[in-house]
Image 1 (cartoon, rainbow, N blue to C red):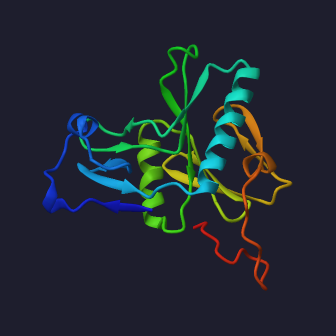
Image 2: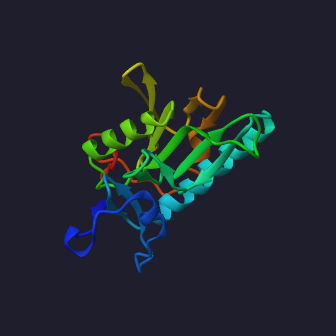
Length: 201
């Protein structure tokens, strides 16, 4: 969930002002067109998935000798002045791991309130700084959307079920769905076979 802070309480911020800003609460914020946007507090499932995916990526990248690093909720400057994103997980690559700085993959663990327009804007922001793939994960159902840049558009692949796997060409690794959803309580399907409280867009 993303909630814009009331504009009447703040002036529009530059990136530098935003990064130095103390919100006075424990929420995570992104800066969108100069305005802070609060992100909802992560659920238990969100936290477990974040650890599962981060560890899976880190271990596989290291084993493959890839010059890439995994970051959690770190600030990603989208433009020179007004927008900062903070994906749940970000993979940067470079000549070596110590100096890896080029963002290539973003992972977003979706909340039920994430809107289609919000996620489309995020994907476009990510593409503008060179990110090649965006992985969006449902918290309630073992279902993923893997978006990849194709010229000036996005192409999406849906992966569903714990027996599946996700091929991340941007970083050269494959993640099993069962590993992503390990220890995560999934919502039982309703009479139609779909999760009773599906959050995937």
